[in-house]
Amino acid sequence: MSRIQSRLSTRWGHWVPPIAWMGVIFLLSSRSDYPDLTPGPPDLQNILGHVVEYGVLAFLLARAIDRQTHVRRPHLWAIVIVMLYAASDEWHQRFVPGRHADPLDWVIDVAAASVILSLRHWWRRRQKTPSLHPAPDGSGSRRTAGAARR
Image (cartoon, rainbow, N blue to C red; front, side, top):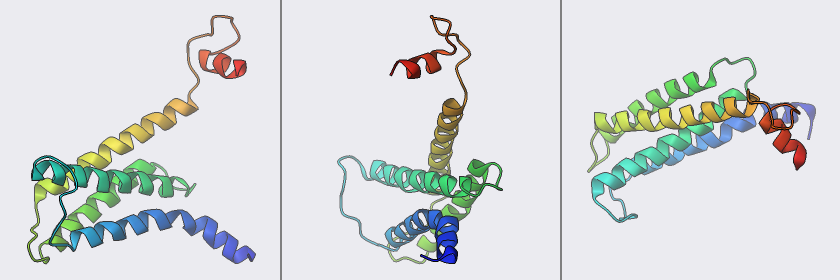
């Protein structure tokens, strides 16, 4: 692989998963009929579908944005993109026979993305921050002491 191809794949390769997932969401939104995939009421299926679709999208976007080292607050940018894409998805559904735009779906999409991004942010901070509690043997933090024993 040439240096140019390597640089392009490194720089833009991490955008393939979120863009592909956006394509999946678009295709799912274009369908008028859905098979019954989960037990339970249709409203629950609808909510779970939105939570999965936009939770995954938010995670993939944050990961892609995070790899752009010059971008600050990747979670904020990810939620803005999710908000815009979810709004465009609801607008798109207005033109699909048997579908309609529902503002509540947009709220569910944004809420799911917010929860996933909050969990991701919490997890990443937890991984970077050493424990403030000293280890019982005085060798540093408990996290460090536990890792040293392995």
